[in-house]
Length: 246
Ligand code: PGA
Image (cartoon, rainbow, N blue to C red; front, side, top):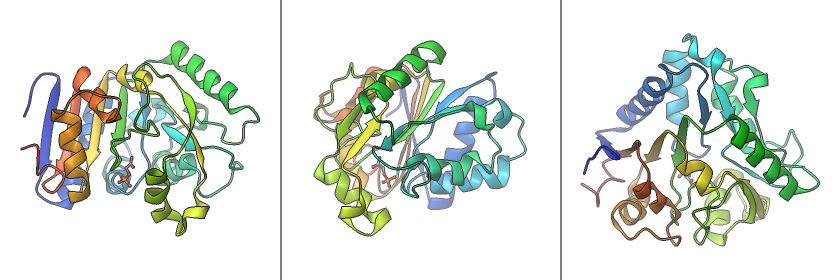
């Protein structure tokens, strides 16, 4: 499946997947002056970050990159190792020397999280839209922390994580009770406004939900189905994840 709106790239092996992800990001950003980008945490993008750092670290573009957080847990102090921001900083922003003043991060410990969501929304209205959104897809169809049922017109908002997302995130912290219950996320309207979107999907566990998102009905039950409604989407999938869409 391929159209002007949606392009699907299937890679042969893990190495290709990471290489292709990194080159897609660089190709998209390089022509732009001060690109605004959001980047995901999770297992899927880690290899892409390694390639960006190993092979593209010296590109001048990182000096002008503007980063905005994709999603974050709520209620964690600034140095907590579970913070998504610290993950992306460690894997990517720090080694690529993206200037600190170009990084817009969620204040996980904001006393009023709805006001924090408003602040980020206002910032995006003033400085957006995103030039590039790189996202993963959750087993339940979530994109960032936009869980099933999230309205398409949602802006930045705080939410309670679904049990499925808590279980899935427990992979990183060993135990479910180490996973915070609340999150804050860019909304589907913020993501849909992105000029380019790259979706990373690897492993058989993503094949069914990827097919539902791309070929099933456009429904809030599958938040990732918003991808069918926007332009300039590239799906990068390995063979296992692409099983039901090629
Ligand atoms: P994963 O997470 O890359 O660790 O599979 C993706 C997601 O849940 O958004």
